Length: 272
Image (cartoon, rainbow, N blue to C red):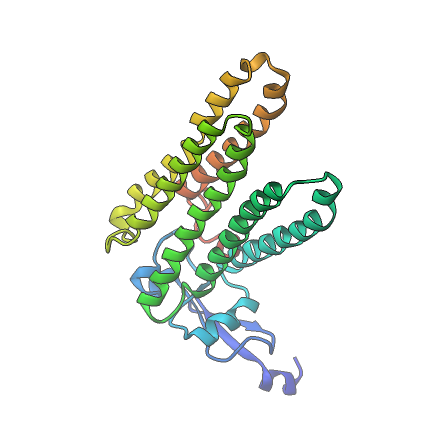
């Protein structure tokens, strides 16, 4: 390696080993092992290396452009936000006008899309700033991430319930009010000082599963109102609804069981 380049390069310590990185790596950023990070960052012992820690806000932002065990989390959600944003502009400018959508359609579509985008941005913020040197700041971003998940769930419910019960205003209001009340209950639960603790981890999971699983009630009701599974309308839409729940269930199982890193500790450092 040329001597000039060697002098301008920075090194990042990674698990007791030294790995060469390009000049673009900001000074002051170091990657740590699981044993070296603060206790509040120790969530998955099977991810053994690649942790950012002890960083001020400025370096948290700069760490967006280095490879760490949060890189995939950050960029997948950031690109997800950009995807929803781009699709939203396209649909608002082309698709909805072509279908002669009403003002109601624009409002409901905007609510759902805004919720999805906000969910993505909250997750980006958490995965970017979770390594902050202040535990209080890190916890605040974690709380915002959980709030974003709730908002994302709300974004799924509002358009689904609104159009499923479009011709039944009573049940539409019942289900929308119930969902909103459940989301608000989750928000209030987050105020509790122990909500983000590891002792409440199962309770947090149970709360989100309850809110998400509640959607099966209006789904079954909608199937019944439309003549059961023999209805062409039901046969057209129910596979999509069940498919969405199946994907969510599989993702949740991967998250809870910590698979595949549980069986290959230290292997999935940069794609966790």
